[in-house]
Image (tube, rainbow, N blue to C red):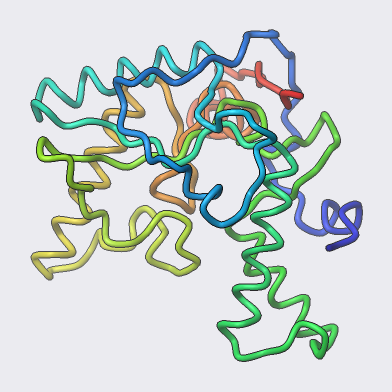
Length: 245
């Protein structure tokens, strides 16, 4: 476990300075139009959703996901968006942060109880490149805890997951959306084209993509507002979705 006030100050992201004007739109169940993995990937690792389904999002976000899938199927009949992760309570965010920290320590051949201050800091920097701080502060909610962020990939008409060149939540440079952009390898070119397809359908429905993760999209939260304002500074927007209890 960590001192989350100190962590929050150290790993504060620019988008967290965007004000939130909560619209009180409800969370709703993601309809079966999409591909869903059961049990949920984080439940398989031991995350506790307190008996609730993890496959919930804000109503407006679900509506836009449906638009994205409709656009996908115009060009790729039978293909669907697969929802990897959606609404994530802060308790689950905390679980995944701690899980990833322990995994990173083990992968480095280290022992948690023997880490130096520098080693511990280095590992946390890796973890918080991938995960938002599990903040309980209503002004700086983790994106997934707002019900406005979703991790997605694609499945083809046979139900097979489309190869994007890396796994979701992979803690490596391959997670960057443009990692394969300049490659001449035929397989890498294909991976990049799949990522561009995903970006096209999601952005066409109003989503913004995380700058460092090909799979993470949001609509209406702080990250969405910050990215929208970076792209269009003459028409500034605020976040409309804050943390859901």
